[in-house]
Length: 186
Image: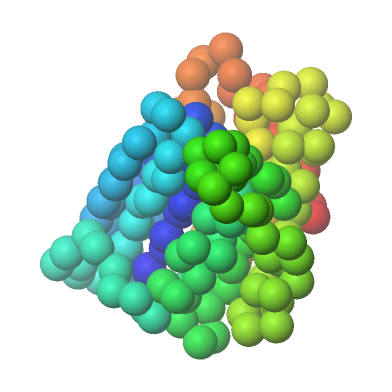
């Protein structure tokens, strides 16, 4: 299984990929992770790959081979859509974060990204930011999005929640659990 997690620095991309990897390990699979940070601390792209199976030899996934692409931002989904398999699934957080080229006026942010992606791919979108704010902490949007993605990755909900509880900071276990369940119910 090939999973790609993309987002903008600070959205929880790395934590999310670690939770996915640990859940696959718990299920008895060989797991490889790869992280590309880029300009993450300055709002740039963050890309991670999680691969699991009976035996995995390398962490990086080739274009056109991703089973599940999880994106924490619309433009990042568009930017990396070519990695998705023809029958792959894309989970997109309906969120807009302007890249520097848009901020300085050199480019404009594309409209209708999710609609365009749905014309080509199987896309499930969620407003993880709004859900996270509703439950009291905007920083757990990644757990909301992961909850939705978990249904398309596999494994049972209890295993996801156990790994989540053992991975997130102790003081955030309760709010991350609520966030994950909100996404899972979506």
